[in-house]
Structure formats: structure tokens, C-alpha cells
Amino acid sequence: MAVRHTVGASDPLHSRGSVDPNDGLPVTLEENIQHYGLNRFKIKVQGEVDEDYERVRAILRVAEESCSTFSCTLDANEQYRSV
Image 1 (cartoon, rainbow, N blue to C red):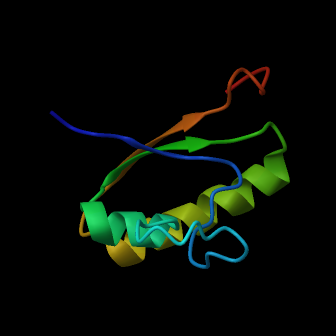
Image 2: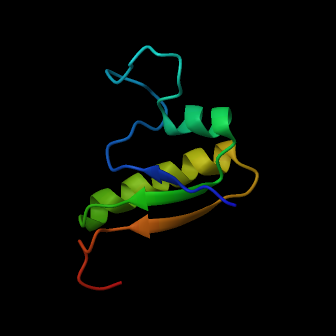
């Protein structure tokens, strides 16, 4: 069974910033990949082409740096009128 990790539109990628529950669990995408060995991702986008493009590229950079192989899907929640 393959587990797919959802990367939310505002989930931190590298830096915890102000999001740190201080519970010892991973918070950032990078930490989650390292801790759980993730390599399948569902990337949430919001319907803003330029912002979504930059966010997806940033997520792909983290995956490329952290995983030997990976796959991903996009989830726009019907935010875009066409592919």
C-alpha cells in the first residue's frame, strides 16, 4: 500500500517559522519526508496560476532534494476552470 502525503497550500516546507507545536513530531515537508520516508504527494493549489506555480516548484525542489524518486498529484478543489 502506498501512502500519499497531502501538502497544504500554507504548510511549511523548510522552516517551522511560527508553526511549532513543540511535540517532537515533524512539521515541515522536509522533516516529514526525512522522518516518514515519504515519496508520494498530493499538492493543494488555490487557483492563482502564478502563486500556485511558484509553490509547486518550491515543493518539487524539496522533493528532489529529499527523495531518490517521488510522484505527485495536484488537488485544485475545482479552483481552475480547465486543465
